[in-house]
Image (cartoon, rainbow, N blue to C red; front, top):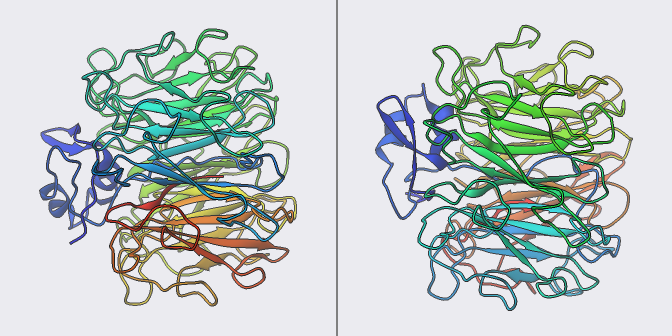
Length: 568
């Protein structure tokens, strides 16, 4: 039986208590026959969940600007290894960095890097179950043309406050990521100038995304604080925002921001277990030059539907995010113009991209539980941007499942289509961004939960599945390296970048539960390269990377979960 672990604090659903990092699976399976198995697997402390399901806290969003940590023109890839043991410190976590080249990702020139809190120059120290690297986001926070990396450490204790959480920042340079010039940073809610305060189980850093919300040329960092209590609302969640500057991220000029559903002007009300900030993504939905922030509120209750889920949108301005001009938006499946109605899990994943190339970013929203006759099959709703922001009528929103016309394969029980990961980029370089959809619990033939990835290509009318055809890719697809195996979780995390700088976006696919050298849950990533016909696995060849690959630092170990999160 596979053991996955999560944080040791709970969400509460009526008389039930559910581990916070089990929340999306609770939503996914709430009405399924396997619910009792999930509930029976919950145990406190030491982060254990005895099932094959886990939360993805990967960064997702608009991949128009790729991460180039050494500014050599090739996209680079940061890989979260949240279960890495550092010495005898279990699950302290680490981040592997692979650099791009003319032949794609490689590990020798420049050498790959393995970062953790015992690395020279890195602030703080590795500790039991810190989970350094569980979430990642890349952006140029000091605008020096070298991209920087934000690393979520949601299990970090601050002083003696367990699970308060923290975020580490490594700055880019001509030699890649480094920790001394400029110095790395270590942020928590106890850092000077940061709003809120570190509390037990806040898990500051549980989600991350970067964007330029005040359009000053410096990337800013939005940080999910999933376990934040607001007044009497327990674990309702919040979002901190740190603004970039010539010296990097800072909290005083301009001041940092803290957002919740109790913030002035914000629609909705903070309630227990809302999970405001579960996922984050940035995009310019009204094309005014300021990035906007989409915030998943996956635990939101609507009427008598517990965990129906919602997405809050805050629009950027010269002063950063704000909720009044233009007004914030609150999207859920009960809105009159939404084409479909979904029971639970709206907002399990997010990604922004311009799928119809009208200059306005659009928003793809993963739906964890979709009652189309097969519980947990999953779905993706797409809202299109406009001069007034996201809307659902002109053009119409779209609702995609594996039962949609022309979509390959079919919706099946607990596939999890779109439930863990989405990412947008232009894989065939036709000017329209495309959408990659993780289906991490897809069974391939008789192989359960091996995982797969679906690709929908953009067009003048938005995402479509016929011209060009959609793609359905897994480890048994022609020319794809390795083979589909039980519980691999292929597609659990996704990120896009142009790793060989040929003008076509490439796709990194996390396979964090892959067994390497018979070591279960060690993890791997697959790389598919883009071409004029889209993603493919033969010219150039796909790649399959893990900690046993030549030149890659670290060693396979259980449960490293290499590839749990990705940023590029």
